[in-house]
Length: 433
Image 1 (tube, rainbow, N blue to C red):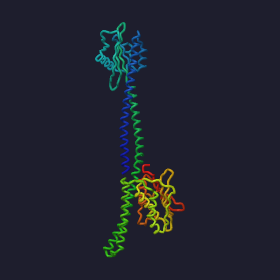
Image 2: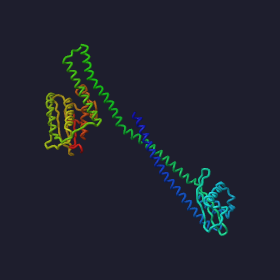
Image 3: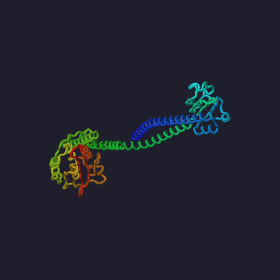
């Protein structure tokens, strides 16, 4: 599913990028080609002006000079002296078809009134006309000019093929196309890896969700199985409906209720629907109250239960007091469950150099192996020793971590000196910090 989504998103991103590249390339090509056309036209007119001025000044026309003009300016010239073509031009096989010369002269006559065969009354000034022509898919710049002379006139027809300019434009278009294709290929590779990286949290979340559902189903099935088996035993007469039966139902029902409550809390955290009531809290007072609350539990377990508070006054902390109580209860309950009788559990409050408050719950129990420190905060993760403990489902530490994050804090786990585990909660003095 995610691979298909990755492919679709990559295709969409490449398509959008390709559209943007195509539009930008077309704009750039239009500007560049317009500039090429303008430069070619300006060069054509400048060369014409130079050549026509030379023709006005020359008394004789040589074959060498005409060929030099054609070579230097990429022109093809057809010159008439008083309507008669030059003799040496008639001997050469011109690359321009005769009908194209005729078409150019006819265009000059019809559109600009320049008739090389019958110029009429000549003025003392040179007359010329420039235009473009197309013949058999080929494009030309054309010019027709009448130059008055003492003994008549000279008629000049100029054709300049635009093949070089069109080849330059074609090469530019191919270069743009290849550049765009290479850019799309690179963008496709980039988007493929980038989207895969962006989807990685979703894939992990989906995997965790699947594992959560499987683990939750197992945990829910256990108390239900016990309850249903007892009910079936009563119905079959194998077991009497006495206080033992009711105790089993009550115990498993409470266990099921705790599990459902924990799952609902995590569902609220996932949907970001948890609400908190922040207020200024004296953290040392809160810890003393929690310590007193768990003191009877510690005595019943045969544990030493100590608290350590700083000598200097501790600044008030803006937090949700009930949520912090819940977080501490989870950590302390875990410590009581893992610490053997006669062990020591200590609740400590301190302040970092940056002003944050640190609350630590340490025990001298079996501790947590290094390979499990990274996963103890995941859902339904429990140490092997506690898997038979029906009071724990492996959701408490995950809830505690969500509460810490809700207060813009964090919770970490480390080793207690001499053995055991220490959970440390770091909270900023203000949730806005």
